[in-house]
Length: 637
Figure 1 (cartoon, rainbow, N blue to C red):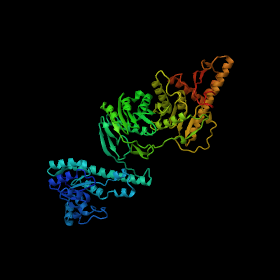
Figure 2 (cartoon, rainbow, N blue to C red):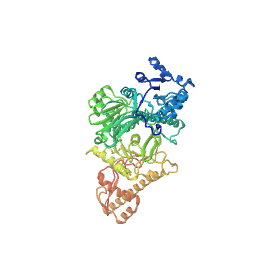
Figure 3 (spheres, rainbow, N blue to C red):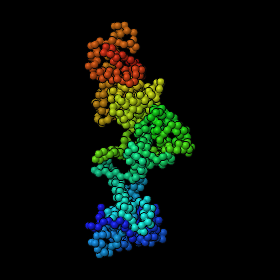
Figure 4 (cartoon, rainbow, N blue to C red):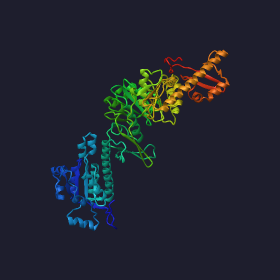
């Protein structure tokens, strides 16, 4: 920072005698100028700002009269002159500086009021390249930095929001400004030029197609101060980046309490999820808690979609965020307000629905005017010690054409539609995650677990809890997740789910993959292109497990034939020790039996699935249920 001459402290108060004003945003300009004139301040100005002041009857000196040089190059050169920068940068307590000003006939400038060409606005409006370049301000940032550097003697204002405070202090201080104010204004000025340059640098990186440029600058403007962050002991604030993507940041807040840190985080997650579903084709509702979906559903109306989404996990939905992909009507509003809800966000809300929601005064209602485009490019980042991680926005989407059926039984059209639905939901669930879906609605969601097996169990347990004494909705459902492992696949079979969609985590050619073994898998499976050889090998492992099960069943039937046991599905079958030794030495069979035993304790023995549970060292129970993938899809083998 600029310092006074050695041994000299920065003056506490500085008298404002001359001000240079050059602004793009002219809000509040006349009021500020009148206050300056009231305190005897000489005003120097440029171009359109000077004309506006003169038209208002305010005495103003054009900058060309100060520099002795006319504006040129269509206004590109007007303030880049020693008469301007010398007047801003001179240290008043340095005799050499003041002598240099006197020799060259340069007067000091005590107050600079500048806001920059609106580059960000042109960017939002989609200006062409030539127009965008013309919005890059040169003289403005140079003057701002000069005045901010010399804040010991000069005040700089870059935001019309600061005019009122500036006028109040001038009036209270007899036309002077204090050091604390000058420092605060200087800090704001440097932050403004930094964010301005960040926007320009990001624009150039986009034009060059550089997703990860050598230097990445991210800037934001304070939009909301919060009482606390994720936890009560953390401070927090929301900063707007200028990106106009529809969501919590750009929405109009119709009613309710101030948004909290967690509210904004969860609301953004909810709206991004529900935007995956085209409102012209179907109504969609997403209910979010702690950035994970409690339930997501489609319907012919928002009311229907809400009821189906709520049914997935009504306990967790209490105090959640509700996002809709269409205008909320009265019927949907009546359903939503029946339980405690933190935030509702939608592209639009009907007048009747607003009246219904208004009865819940603390319920926050956000209206965005549009949905975000799930396929639009963008960036996502998070801080880590020593830096931040940056990645492109997850704008991928699985379509029917991306899938390849690798089992004998192909999924039905309804199963395929549910798998694609589950994929879109799973994209927004924290990993490790499992999503069960049926009929365009989630019926079980397991999120954020250290293993997919645990996520599968949680999803199945939630479905069972929602069903009460009835049949869990996972019966006949499909599942989706970015990756699937053999243990979680077994749990999904036990939960009653049929086909499983699977997205591979690595890109690798798989033209040489044989389908001979994978077609023997117990359940229909679809791979998302491109496939990964290791993942296909896991499918083969599932096939090996299935063959182990089949062998044990054959042996069981053989024992029945020998011993005369009436039924292998209702009796305990003694197993020869030699077979048991073989089974426990066989890796796929051993893994399946041990996990099946553990799952029996979690899910009970009555779940609709093929399962074999080792009951003792000399016996094994076998059960076969309907609905599993077979050669003809009928459930028989």
